[in-house]
Length: 163
Image (cartoon, rainbow, N blue to C red):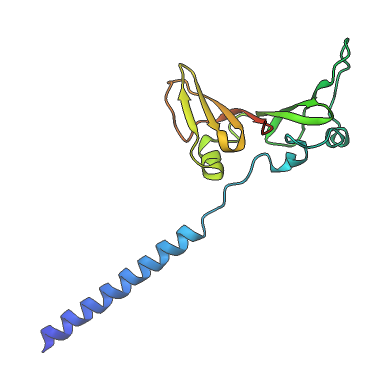
């Protein structure tokens, strides 16, 4: 009888332990930190937005020596994950946006969590990631020529959905 009580006690403790671990693991998985969208602060200057958005932000748009419906404008934000933001404007609307990422402030893995699995091309020193669904490309430098989720992103390119 004592032996039976001892086994039942051990089984109860184990069940409580496994239940606690199960609920704890589930809670940790659900409370994970959400990936931050690195371009959210620049949503107003993404492709498709009107030229007035860049004027309000103080972008520099040098005058071209020839008459053209296209413009190229840039901004050097002081406090941002990006050191340089460029936009191309066609017929009064932003058609392309590109972002130079400050050193080690954005990792490939963060973009994968946010936007899903991209098409990946690894070259000698560069990894190119393409998310066709959202017309976005990221460039990361790889000194080994191999892909890693920990690679720092150097540039982001976002294009307007076309025809």
